[in-house]
Image (cartoon, rainbow over all chains, first blue to last red; front, side, top):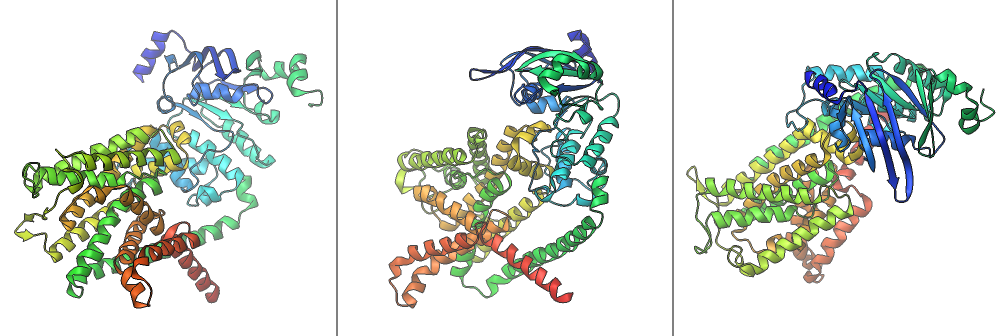
Length: 260
Length: 356
């Protein structure tokens, strides 16, 4: 932990996520143009915008799934722009995916186990983990947190959509996350499952910050303290949820007249 | 929470099903393996030397090498056509460092120095193959490993200082160690049986250890593996190295059994035969490699005689072999193992049906 503090001090910034001049090109298409964004540790931020606004690309640049074409990405002060995704994850960054990316031929328990193992040691161990090992306790805890006890030993490919979405979140909570990126976690969930999701998000320890991309305003605005609006690969407005909701420009561009 | 309430009853019965299913699967699977093991241990009391070595010994050696392909393909989703080549590297190296009829090339090291040397070189070769193909997927992995297999085949064919060209090496006896002459059929059979059982058990064990589980994670979703902290490329290369360890043991045993090695032993045809073995047996479980190898060896050994027996031209034996494999893969894309799983699942459900 001291090394993290040193890195933060060296960089002279207290932000969890800091993007400076980040652009991402796909051929001639600019998916992101000159994004500058900072999120404090523990801050909960929604990124809103219409389809194609560049929200998911923004997350991909932060995690390194697609590195930015230009600009720098800092995570708790450390320049991670050129680090591969797994190195960023090991530093405490987590993410979920819009379309569930799970291990369909393994059980729920094995999926969660892999996530816990991935941010711990002995990823290459040839020795099986005993049931009494501490990591198995964290696996059980995550499974109950995601309400998946009843299907813990089922293959993930056999789960219902909502259960897969819950597992998607459980994988992102493994280990000791410091900052999480949620990409449309409510997509395809029933109203009651959305309630569960809001409960899980608001129950997260306060030191864990997150960015959430979400089309469902009822979910998004209930679980964040700040909002970033994107349009055509650029940020055009930042503010508190109430300000954003009341902003006429935002209503015209994104929420539409009918939103109430 | 709401999810639990709406489907409060269903998960309980599903879990119940799952548990008894897992238990009976465990019993049936392990009982079968244990019975098979006992039968194989006592086989020398009834079987002729030919059956012992040329059918079971050869079958288990091909099974070991196919197991390395099953490990990569079944658990890692990486179909490598270079596994026979890895076996060939260790087979050639045991003759280069150990004994053969060519004193100009062979160094005549004792077996306990030559065999580890051969294995180390083969594992390094396997890891290098992995490094070249780890960033590719699917058909491109097959193409790269096929290219490596072809390159090694032509190297052995045309290089005389080390590989002795198309003639290869002959008169490579299994060593005499611990007072036992391992080239005799019964000791050789037990030596092969020991390593077949060992490699099988190790692969089964590792499939549920962190390394093996992570490999299956890489197979199902490499991008997500990166996003939960795994270095996917490093994991793939490690898997190639481990598979090479298995294949290299098979390669040494192959040389000791055949008493010779030449380019044809590890050529492209042999590589494709190995793929056929793995696919016919089934990539879903390690035992599939041995089942496929056994079917292959039995067909190779007896198809000609069987055809003559029923009054057909014995020279058509390749057609019979091809048709057999075609029929198996046609009815069960996941090989004999898949066939077995569906049968036992059906038997289980029928059993439950009659009990109710």
